[in-house]
Image (cartoon, rainbow, N blue to C red; front, side):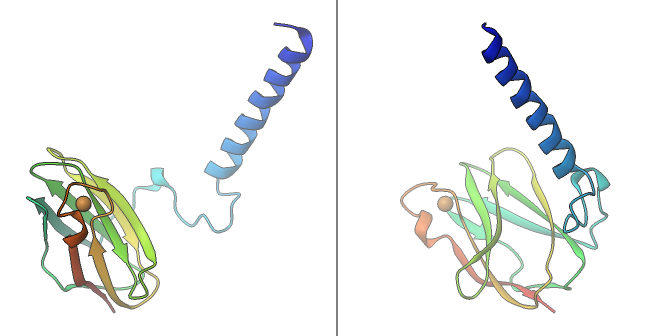
Length: 138
Ligand SMILES: [Cu+2]
C-alpha cells in the first residue's frame, strides 16, 4: 500500500469512528432513547403469522407516549410486520423470521387508527396480508 492510500485509509477510519461515536451518543438531541437503555414496555402485543394470515387481537388498544412491545412469530416463511397510518405512510416495520420471536419496541406519539401489513414479499397471497384498524392509539 502506498503512502497516499494509507493516509486515505486512516482518514476513513477516523471518520468512521467519529460518526459512530456521535450518532450513538446522546449528543444527538432527538435521540431520546437508545438501544442499550432497554425501556420497560407497558404492554406486549402478540402477532402471529401462519399460511399468509396475520392474527392479532385487533383493534389493539394502545396508549400514546408509552413503550409498546410487539412480539411477532411466524410458523412457516419470512413475513414483514409493518405499521401504517391511514394515509398509507409507514410508521415502522421489521422482518418476521420463522421459528423465533421477533421483537420491536415502539412509542407512538400520534393518536389514531393504524393498519398492519406484511412488508416482506412472502408469496402469491402476500398482497392480501393486511389487518385494517389493527391498532388504536389513544
Ligand atoms: Cu408478505
